[in-house]
Image (cartoon, rainbow, N blue to C red; front, side, top):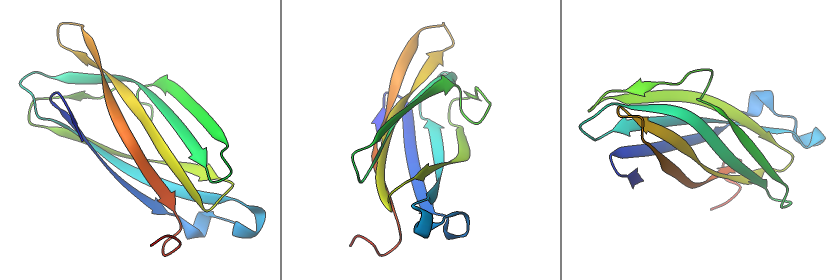
Length: 124
């Protein structure tokens, strides 16, 4: 996925050791890599997520930066972080966006397309 000069890659995974299916508690981690393909540095200032479980329950999460940081990503560089989410169902979807700021102070939205959270082998 590319928005302007920012490319976002997502790798979700199920954390069986942190989950309790019998209590409808499913934990997923996701690793995100944000690559700056442009010619100027960009800073990730805000995030917004929409998380939807298989029951249609929607949760919005907004806040400053990611994992307590507002990373500045130099041209040609990338930033990778891992975070997590818990659901009441074994399947869900996340999508959202990052507010990015250029060196001149102007901002743009880097959307994160929907990605699936699912137990391995649950969906073919």
